[in-house]
Amino acid sequence: MNSEIDLLRDNILQCTKCDLAQTRDHVIFGEGRTDAGIMIVGEAPGRDEDIQGRPFVGRSGQLLDKILNACGFTRSEHVFISNIVKCRPPANRMPTPVEAEICMPWLLKQIELIDPKIMILLGATALRYMAGPDHRITSERGSWLILNNRLTMPVYHPAALLRDPLLKRDTWEDFKIIVHKYRELVDPKHYCRYV
Image 1 (tube, rainbow, N blue to C red):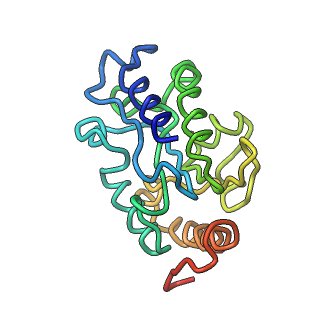
Image 2: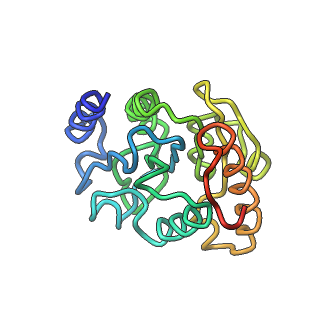
């Protein structure tokens, strides 16, 4: 399987199918275990990600790492992190429907090869592009959906938590549910000191 992932990475890194290819510094393939039990899907790379060539390395990424750490999860051992689109939209704007549509087959192939038991969608944009335009993060966060034949939980994006710290409590409740499900589906002995 690793050869398939390597081939996919090579193809994604060379992609020029949409206009974002003209303004990016790096294509952000994703990061983590390529056989992870959890796959995290965000919206798009931002400025810091485009500079460093890694997903979720700015302030939102640092907060995400703290949340994962509190759950006993690490990027290297438990999760794979990717985005709806692999290149930074100019000025960190939301990806357009056309950009998302062009890039989505890459993400779906990643999901197929990594084959996670659990998917986490970070924020409204990831939820809309993965589940459909009628889905709302405020009403569906913390609830399990079935997407691509996988248990999927939408949660608030870490950037939303930075803007409104009151959302942190709900997000922690959501991640506690994820920890329990991870123990059920992936590793019954998974250690989390808080859950």
